[in-house]
Length: 237
Image (cartoon, rainbow, N blue to C red; front, side, top):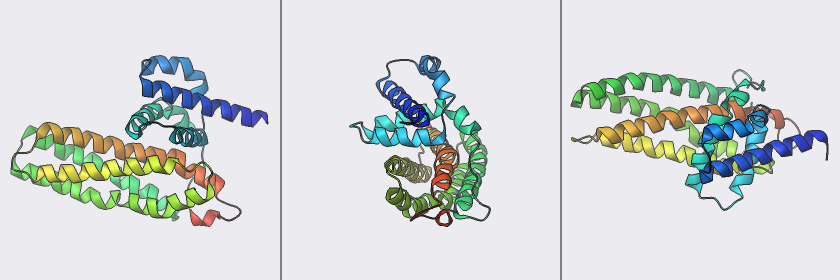
């Protein structure tokens, strides 16, 4: 085993151990970071994909794993964000997905103002405006279905460590479910303000989390691996 492979295996094993600690709530997240900070600082995007693939093969409740991965990615955000990765080619399919996410992020910022107005004055007009804002977000979330139908089959065919797609699909489903719920709630005459605010927070967090995972982890790894053999770079660019 080469030194490079040994280092990579060590980083992946660290991520798996860290994830187990997060699932079991054995220690505070801040304490875990102190323990693993030196190794966390050396992480690269492919380490995350391999660790998630390993975890998906274990008998872990999916909801527990989703919660742990959210916490894990908060811990590893800086080194992954700072990593100099391959960029999608202008006008390519992946570039289209990136730009779609940028528009969705902009719409979330606009929704923030609508939500604030609704909380300040809860009336039918503001409920309608907020509902329309979430309806306007739907087409940009529907792009997740394109990812599932185009990118995920490529990953499953070409990667041995493809099990991350099941987790990603589950996160997509959460957003679709929450958007449907909040739009339905805003149509009701007696809107549940607390639940609407909770759903709004969940939707915003999940969409931005997927944006980060796609742009900083999944897409760079695809660009760095899909350029030879049976899968050409052109398929994802």
